Image: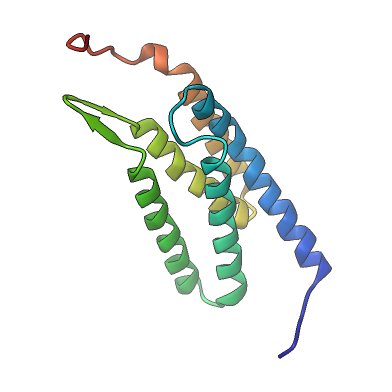
Length: 145
C-alpha cells in the first residue's frame, strides 16, 4: 500500500473546508441567538461534511455520473437532518426555516467543493438575510395564546 500525500492538495482542501465553515457561520450564529436548536455546531459541521464528501467523491470517482450520485446522497442525507429540526405543536409547525437553512448549508459545502465560491457566497448571504430580517414580516398566528 502506497501512502501518497500531496501538500498542495492538503492546503487546497484545507482552504476549501475553511471557506465552507466561514460561509456557514452567519446562519449558525443567527440560529444560536434565536435559540432554534441547530446552531453553532450543526451548521458548520453540515457545511464541512458536505464539502468533504463532495471533495472525496471528486477525487475518487472519475465520472460525472458517480459524482452526481455522491451529491444526491449528500442532499438526501441533509434532508433527513433538517427534518429533525421540524416540530409540530397543535396547529403550529416550527423549525422549517432552520431545516431549509441546514439544507442550504449543504449546498454551500457542495458549491465550495466545486470551487463555485460565488454560488456559495450568494447562498450564504441570502440565507443569512432571510433569517435575520424576514422574521418581522412573517404573519403572526392570532389563534395562539
